Length: 71
Image (tube, rainbow, N blue to C red; front, side, top):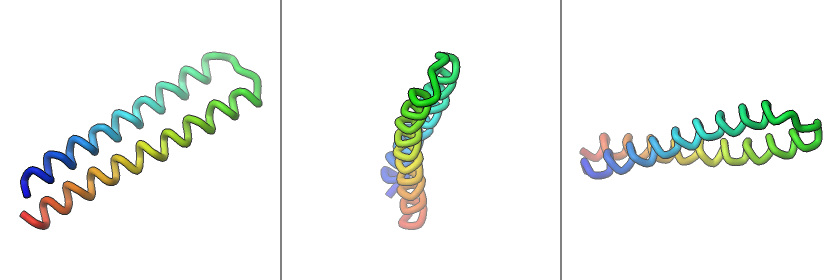
């Protein structure tokens, strides 16, 4: 089950990359000088993407854990 560990690590790194992208998007939105309503809409989209990236990262960590347990 070593392959599950490596696939899980890759999935987890993909989720972490998504989280870093969320940080980048939030900083870019902050610097853009949007009004309150537009900023709120932009941040809601970023939060949705953030939760998806967090879920992918958690799924990858579960795959790594299952690979370790089954190994």
